[in-house]
Image (cartoon, rainbow, N blue to C red; front, side, top):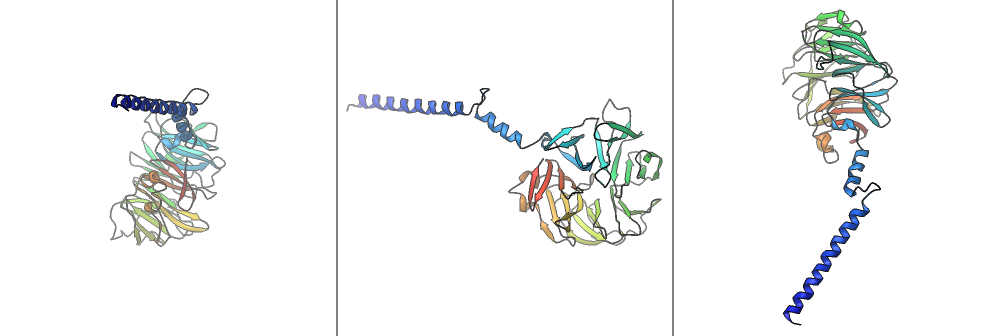
Length: 347
């Protein structure tokens, strides 16, 4: 065969292969189209949307149970309500905190700060599953906290602290000018409520705060970020990841230090019941840690980073357990529900 004939035959063969490859590609894209004429890549994107809800696209700060065990979340300064597997925004203004009683059946409460030009003032409103109702209003921005046993603390930016179980009259019950970070309810103790500032632990007997018995741990670094309890002992967490325990809020025993820092705004620490055993779960700026009550580590971000990288890298704002035992993590990368050991479902 001459060189000219060889080149001609080779060119025709290559052209045939290119034509066949192009036809195959067009056939694949055509097969991937749905009835609306959209291609395979649209189908993939739709499949992704089916396994996430809109709440997974925002930072979630808090989650609570209210109104006959309905789940609510604070995400992107909007209150969300769960219906089935979906989460829907309730609107109502720019919420700063959400709280509820300890039964999971009472109303939802939200503190709305004056970040919305449509709001004349800061206020607390309740939501009964249908409508919002005004409970109390203020002239300052504030932070509303659940301190246990259906009791709430409200810290106003003007400096005053209010404590009451009735949010409709909480503005009339000032107990001082202490800047409180969080609080908890120690059931099996003579003084049941303990509240923390960034540097002191206070007991509250229903009338006045008392920080006189508190002994500052010599090992402490950072400031106090969260306080929780198991019914008999208190657990105190600092922003640097240190964990201390105490039976009465006086002297504190250092039990462990976790990697990463802990946010003080929402207090990401809670004693949770897992299969009938109390554990301590702490959220940090790089996922959560699970441990025995003596500080023995059970799980750290390294254990689930491969399966849930977005959870392992997330700032965890809150750890919450429902009355039915479900555990939720409110994070900068959405809301996560624990489904088993080292297993989570993104909402």
